[in-house]
Length: 88
Image 1 (tube, rainbow, N blue to C red):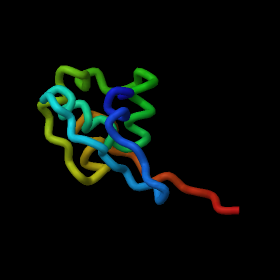
Image 2: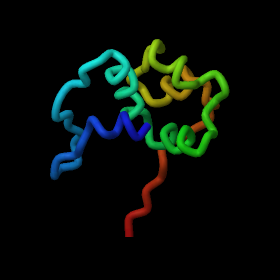
Image 3: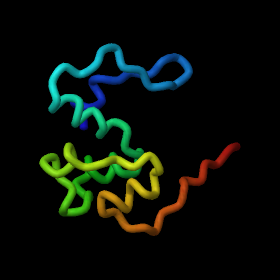
Image 4: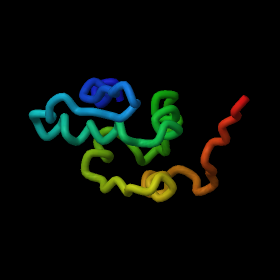
């Protein structure tokens, strides 16, 4: 996950930017980890990812654009809702 995030940075508006394209296929494959939803990244870093999802399985898998479908594709439970943000 850390390697994936090394390829990207945020501009002053918070948009993700790539300074240069990853050079080797492995780097291109793991870069996709940086674009998983924050909840999935949190689970992976905490070791709570589904058993079938590992670094060997992830690179060859298709990553759906929709976050809910992405959760399902990688084996997370379907029950999930967008986080509620409190504004004070």
